[in-house]
Image 1 (tube, helix red, strand yellow):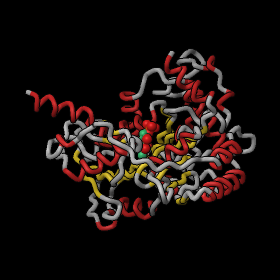
Image 2: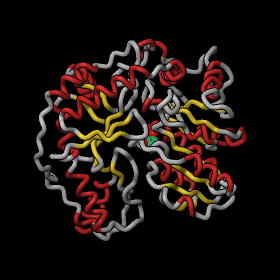
Image 3: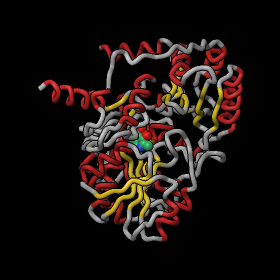
Image 4: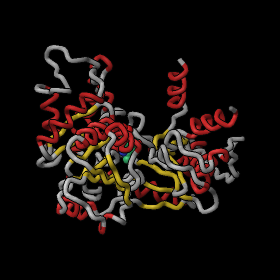
Length: 415
Ligand SMILES: Cc1ncc(COP(=O)(O)O)c(C=O)c1O
């Protein structure tokens, strides 16, 4: 029972969550109303998520009302599942995908599975890019770090050229929850938008919803959701979507902005620089005298767990504070007040990546989080890549794919 001991140990140590899922160790929202006995399946009286017509369809219908003109479908395998199904469905009808920089690995996995032609461009290149009729543009909005951009104009431009926009809104299920939060891409007629309810709303991990504007496209996506998603969807996850939706509809933000202000002041008193993001539920933190890793370590030493850290800073995903929440806010402030800052220089622990220089990447190298590929499979690994990889490793960022590449080339060199 090692995993059990690990998790209960963290809770016994009163760890404070500044990371996803949005229920923050069940201190936000009302997940406690869900009981393990509710873990049911498609028995008489319940419904089939892959062809819903009863209670699950009525819940989908309520979710659809979030944005006028959209059809919603719950998913229990995360936004990853929605992206796989959407890209796969669209690859049957469209020839070219345009991927805007910063896309999650699931987008590339989907393109790979579908063997779809794609071109990657930066956000800055969008305005002058020669979009063509039938292009499918895939964009992440808001970003993991909580940044937004003028998605309204981007969608209008792509539509004016006869293209479609798929928005990976994994980090934006709380968009439009109240005044002061980002607008969803659905306010601007994105063709397909996929939201991870579990990231920023109080839902169970893997709870996600795909929203589609066109009925035919919705049906094609449903076909591939059926291919990619478990055929035994978790009623617990679906119940948590229902709850998160009720939370969203009833949310009153006053307490959120007050507590956020108090938190920012407490951080600034400790000389921590607080970078305000477009999404008020994200804060990026830096300390002038120490690295992001050391700052993250200082939080973790107080059992405050950030979402991630990178060169840009330490990322906090704030709780959607509400009346009656159980989030340990006072303890958070107390712990910030006594944090110790230690700037020791981290080592690589004997890990060497030098043998990868100028080799072909055999498995995509992906810092995780955030899950945005640094080197794609088939690309040449350059010294610049290695500089970034070394830097990530020094900063204890997990990197998927690095071990397989090293092992592969070690074996090859040994032969
Ligand atoms: C931008 C982005 N898209 C998609 C995903 C996948 O979402 P999920 O965890 O719901 O499968 C993530 C996960 O971190 C992400 O950051």
